[in-house]
Image 1 (cartoon, rainbow, N blue to C red):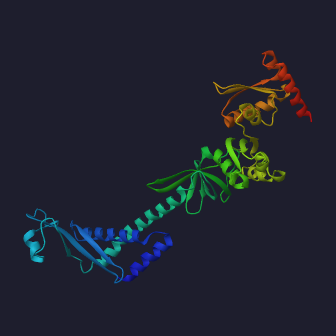
Image 2: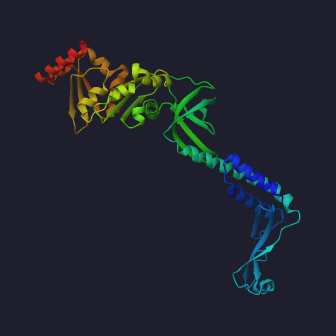
Image 3: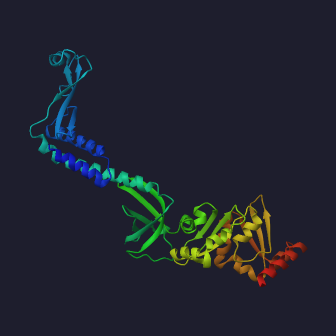
Length: 366
């Protein structure tokens, strides 16, 4: 065996990003396997590789015993002492058994095993690289499409976008470039598998983190996200510093920041609201763009009754109940919406409510 083999292993390791020692171990295992297979031997053997000289030696390892029961695994104390008088029971004796033509046979057998180990090591490297990307956004290119998955090339691996994670309003074409949210990275018997999403709320959150420096820097915090992918989303933001406008930061000058995200999500409408620890304020904000007269809170059941002007009722509820549904998801509070007329009939509005309502009307018509 020439030193060229070791040079090839070193170059292969550098090319594939695999530790050379892993490949050397794989080669040793391959040579042991080749020896046992080609020379019909079950002997416990060890392979010694010398990188400097480029040589390979095979040693049979036998245990020194009082009485030999297996000639391939054991050697008698009497025979052992002929080799070296210092041997004792349970010592291991190594005897070189390298066959003359072993290099040619071993090279053939080693090729397949080393190839397999290289594949396994490559999979390990890829898994390590992508396992840290769970719950992150990556950009990929669509490679192919079948009824179950859209396959997206993320660089070193092809990720799967299941039908359940696709945006219902989005059409996918081969060679399209798109941003995806990594939901899961698994190391399977077939190698690393990455599952991605276009509909996950986490995609919206990460896109805002990428687009809004104040969020990335921690000045503005995303408190909650509610999403019906492809149609409408709500996101609640908060800033500790009262001088910072969290909603304005996310919208950007002339709406440029949020519009970039809307474009990436193919026109999905996004409501950005200010978070508050006060459920009255938070629920009112969450029902944007509708105006709210009153929010009645039931702390025990974590539910609210929201009273809105009659002509704002349909806006507050939204098409097919979407606005109210998203507001409830966003806040974590149950929301029951009533019109001003219905609330009066049920005795839910007081004189104080009327005063507040007048202020709401003034805001509406300014």
